[in-house]
Image (cartoon, rainbow, N blue to C red; front, side):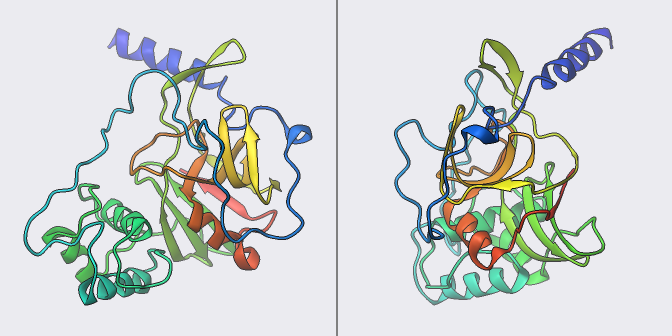
Length: 265
């Protein structure tokens, strides 16, 4: 028991150095554009969502299986349209239903599979279809007001209104890998706790650890932000990644205004 305990203490100590994806502070924030953006410009080379250097994330990127009666990325038709409408009905945001199984539908399927404790492969096979038919949805912990809940175990971000989960998104939080920042070793952690959105930037933020799309900061340099890569497992420096389109959706209609509560658990 001595070695695991020693490692846990060391990890906790290292985690105190973690400051999230953005370590420079508000004075170095990029200015917001004059009008809200509707689509994201191409990110500069260096990727908006580069994972920390060091060992690969513990959970590898899943390889979708193929076979009869399965829907996966690239599929088209009425079955896909029905899938998209059902996902929307259950609150799994996947944009406009168009009958094409694209990246947003895959993100929504990831979220459903996480809520149902299934393999996160983004493919709708018999087990995922059963979860759809049964109407599996995650539960909220908050009871009143608009709250953004980030469930690290499930890797889900939920929009909650008065205790009811209204929308669910696939997210990727801190990988807990070590990385170097400003000459220090830090841990890519997303601390648990109750926070509020205190600052946001309407555009790309060229942060020291990568590019962040329309970030909503809630804990120092940790934010909910858009990224070009949102895998179904923890891979960020500490922020909660969403797809670019999902972040645009949350900005539209000011769904996460300043002072919005953020619960991380």
